[in-house]
Image 1 (cartoon, rainbow, N blue to C red):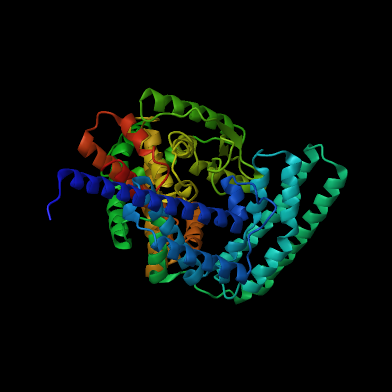
Image 2: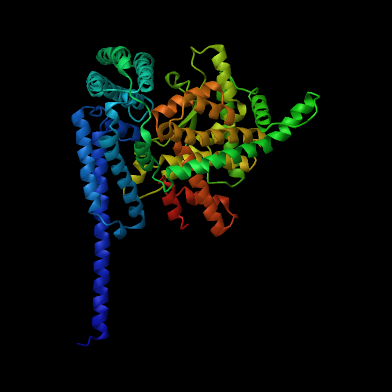
Length: 579
């Protein structure tokens, strides 16, 4: 039967409309499914909701019971079944990426709850100090309203500690040791930091008495729990902290959401280790020659490690102290902003960033951190926190700390934490609009850290701070590379503490205290230490691909585009840039 041209046209139009309707329907299905998942996720994880900036559930705690774990597992298993009913190829470009992010998140949660089962062996899973801290750290609501939610959560602390004691079986010793210290920190937060807030506020006396009863109830429960950790759980803590190759490989896959596998990460890290040391040698040599000339000595054959170590030791003599560190950090922040703008590296947002003194209970781990508002928070201010040392530290420990985090390292930290690092990247990220909140809530840690470490490299490449800051940046790069090596080798290849310490101190030029702390961290946080290096090489790979296609003419345009898609895994940034 012959058809006229008009019939063909009508059929074509009909097929186009059906196609559009199908595509629209698939996007709508996914967007509704994602919205439902996120809403239930926030309800089931009220402590995370608070940190993210959703304050509807600030009076609740997570359900730490076995039934709560089972409910969460079943919820994610059902979500996975729903995702399998959606055809990602029919989704819009943005939704297709968010579908992949959400699926990775759901599958990773099923793995974590159903296979890794940290609630049974990791006491760090029950560190609940953040449930209080995030209510008092930001002025998102009137103080009395926030303290009423603090009181409500404190009332639930005995229940949480009871679940912890019931759920934990055999545990690794290093995890229990750390949990004991964290528990003491939470008690200090409730007794000291909260007391300071109460003393400085004009609160109703009846309310204060009610709050104090809840504080006493919570600290008593934490005290008993701390005793149980120390005297009951610790003697039985014989579980190996190494999670083994099978679990490590699976966990790494979900944490990184990358196409890079274990073997390729290790191969690139070992090559980069040597290349970075060689680069340090080139930067260090002129400084070293100057030092030798000052001493009246003659240059002869020099060992690479001796040159690098000598220069790093020299740089470590220029240090801040507890009286000057905040002022120096303010100066470095202003200089970083000015340099970034003057060199047209990337657009610097107008969002407020405020330098603050780090609270006492958070000091002693790092000298700085970036406290950006949660993606659901109405408040837009970012805090760049700088730390004097804890008041109870010895003089020798204070000296060692500031030698590690010397004046030049302080500039590198400001780059990483503020501009053009975390503060700047997250401010750009918050401007991205999508049909769902998936990539805002389940952002990629590797991309966020990859950008911040790349920012250090970028500023040094452009000459910020001269060779002295460049040396510190390369030292931090060595640390990042070695972190990924020990992360993998400790958990999958039986690397010993001495082997890890030798690598960090001899090849990475780290102080003994820094290396010892990193060994413990690697034991407790499998796969996390790999995120920085993998993120860094993936961001660098994006730059290489962009410059191969578009040339090296406009760095600001490249970086602005790179940061314009929120904070998804790097491979989706690369895909979105058409690379």
